[in-house]
Length: 96
Image (cartoon, rainbow, N blue to C red):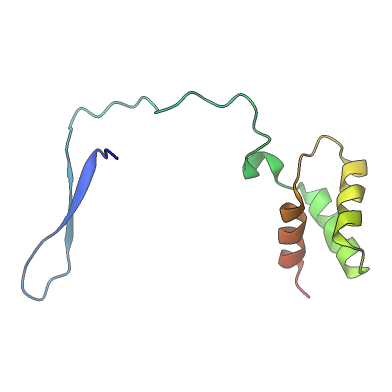
């Protein structure tokens, strides 16, 4: 894999310093791929809103099962494209 820089440890007695050298000084700012068309697969687009997160907290405190929490969120905001792992992570953030 090509990288525009390389790291090299500078060898000096009693030293742990590193140096980064750029291979090409005229590095272009063009990104290496086009922008994505649909964001549903990315965690940023799947994140729960504040209202959804509050609902997860409330239902978790009532000992509601995670799949039922997912159904409740889908009913409240059908445009949200979360996955079960998102519910699990939100429940972990709420604490015991």
